[in-house]
Amino acid sequence: MSHRAPGGLITGVNVNNYNGRVTGIVTVQMVQQATGASFTQGMALVKEDGQWRVCQ
Image (cartoon, rainbow, N blue to C red; front, top):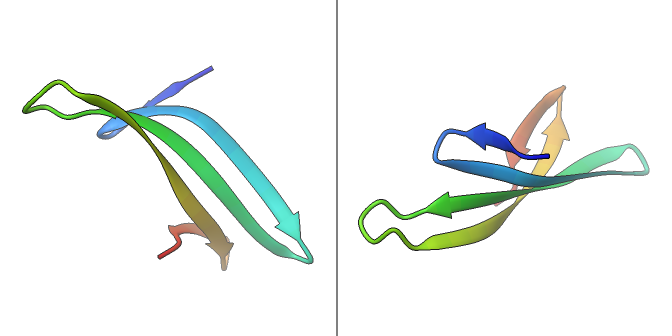
């Protein structure tokens, strides 16, 4: 199953809980508008205070 997101298509989600720290990885497939090139990017996330944010 996949879901459309702004700027891309979510193709995978993985959530982990290690000693109460909740993290996840979202895999997004995107297409560059200028060239039509397609690429896949994994984005690491962490859940803090009930909200997901991108890890930097």
